[in-house]
Length: 293
Image (tube, rainbow, N blue to C red; front, side):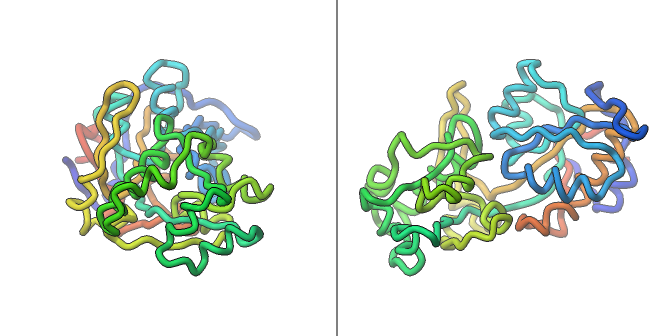
């Protein structure tokens, strides 16, 4: 594992493998960027505002995004995912940069009767046992938010000594695409949803926080989180860990290098509720010599 300071990383960016980086409007370079659904607003709005490069942003669940690249169905210059392990386990990349953290929360709809019950409920999961409460989550086979929801509930079952907690709360009809999950609040379709803190912050939705032992956002609890696991459809076993986001540059062209410098800066993430630690960006794997020297 290679580690460098933020300044050294940004100064040393160099070569990568070929991918899409074309010509944009008014002569600007255009770079195709494939991001996790929870990064969509941050990338399309704040990141775009911090670079002169035109970004063509596509958002997908991170597992789905990694599969699209691995299967040759997408060829983005930059990929940013909500689980860095997907770079090696699905995309088979040699390196990546860890750029941000996050944590899980339970957002609730202040406009519905059952949503408001969650605001003061003790314990927080009590209202979710009611048949009348409509809960939203994402598909664990498509994105990390989905399997991290399962991790939270598995950890909560031990923390609160409620071994049947997941079965009491979850049902197959609760899943929505990550990019549409919180939009369901607008129509009153859901009363509550398991989401990242950043997603609730972006939309200004109230939320319940979880203890550090279960919210997947505390590096000091890394060993505790490992008790939760999930098997992807391809047989890959994922283990609970502190939530981090990663990015990789797949193109050597100057527009892609310039855009990736902005990605690594982290300045586009903090305003959207992500955790940007001093240790980021953290380089992992067989990083190109032009990045590490």
